Image 1 (cartoon, rainbow, N blue to C red):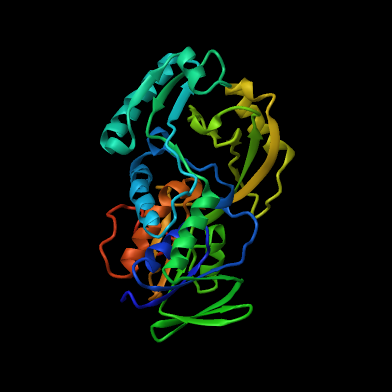
Image 2 (image 1 turned 90 degrees about the vertical axis):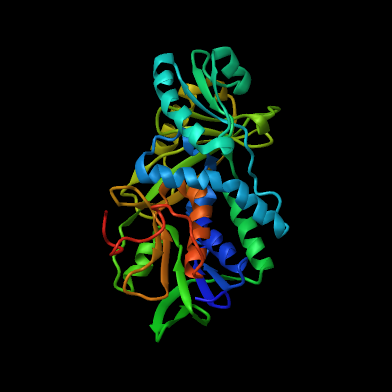
Length: 378
């Protein structure tokens, strides 16, 4: 497909925004269509970019790490189009635990991963309880930590806005509407919204957890399931949280400081809730209990808001997202199933899809390229 092709991107979360920017910045005509439905995972996400401290393994980790390493290039490219602030900052990421022995075990893998990543991951530094309290004052006094200096965080809403702004600078069009039909015809596609019909050469479905429903209308079954995630935003009055690192206990939850005293704690991982975007009493209790168990100094923080996102979870055994051309449907592409890793992997994989769609070399990672059938769990 040539750079002059016209492509419709359905969805403006991190995957859709990254695809749109990747295409538009390479000269393709792009129309981004999004219905602004509540529950977008990107808008709710905590924004941690520190794959080296994650518990992921195998091909998923390789894609995750590649996504983290792509950020300097992403920021450089956005700056070329006037986007210089997406809420990204490398303040470090700290793994914490009360048992120094468990931290020592975790340190072996983290050091190996950081060494492989090089400069983007930075250094790995052991922190005793006093050092840890200097880095993150609310932490429990019995905690020790392992700091990865290259760990970062990003504001998901600002990043998506930045990618879309840059895409529009390159000529992309943003349409706030609902897609009600996709029709293939002799190598082209017609996208029907509630108010228009748009003819394009290709379609990229990047609609998060709704992607499975869109593809089902075309006879494709894709193994993506919605998962609810609840997060709480707190405020610590007078604290210079802009320089605080993200905090990662040896478990599923986390703490992400942002500027101006704002701290995000989370998150629940609720399967079987469908597209229900309500914050629940049980979910809020879990998030608060988890955070206060490792950082009791947050007990007096002001509760600002709760955000709920519906993650698109890949049901593949590898956990890898679905990213590539849909077999049996020429011109139809899919970018979804990122789970909790969208803000780390999404920019790289979205850019990779743009390259592949235009016939340019794409990153050689397992997350790019669908298996023989979208419904496979391999």
